[in-house]
Image 1: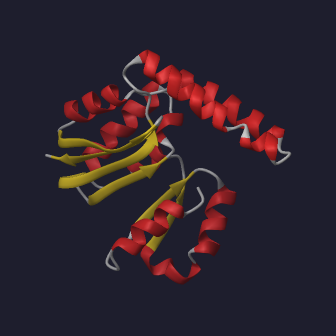
Image 2: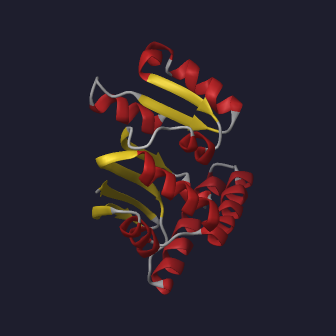
Length: 181
C-alpha cells in the first residue's frame, strides 16, 4: 500500500524489523523508494500474503499487523491466511488488524455502509466523480467478501488467541488486536 502503516510501525521502536508483503510489483518498487533510508529494517516480498506466510517458520514472528487488506479476501482464502498467521506467531505474539469490519447488527452495518458511501460525495465537489464511482464499486464488491467483527473474533478464538479487543471503531473501520496463546 502507501507505506503509512509501515511508517507508524517503524516509528514505534527502532528495534522493529518489518516484512512487507504485497503482490503488486509497482507497489513494492514504490515502497523500496520510500523506505530507501530504512532498507536494513524492511524486507520486501512480492507475493500474495498466503504464499509469503507459508514460507515463514512456525512461531517466528512477534507481531502480525495489517491494514485495509484482509477485508478484500474471500472467506476461504481469509481462513487459510488466519491459520497461517496463528502458526507463524510466537506464543504471546500480537495480532493487529485495522480494516473494514462489518457490524454484527445488519441494520447498523447497512447504515454505516450508506454513510460511508454518502461521504464519497466529496469527490463530486472537487470535480472527480470517477473516483467516487470507483470507490462505490469497491464498497459493493466488499459486501461480497465482508467479515463481521463477531466473525473475526470467533475465528481468532478458534485459532488460539486471547485478549481479543476492538480498540477502535468508527463506522465500518475498526482495529482488532489479539494475543496468541
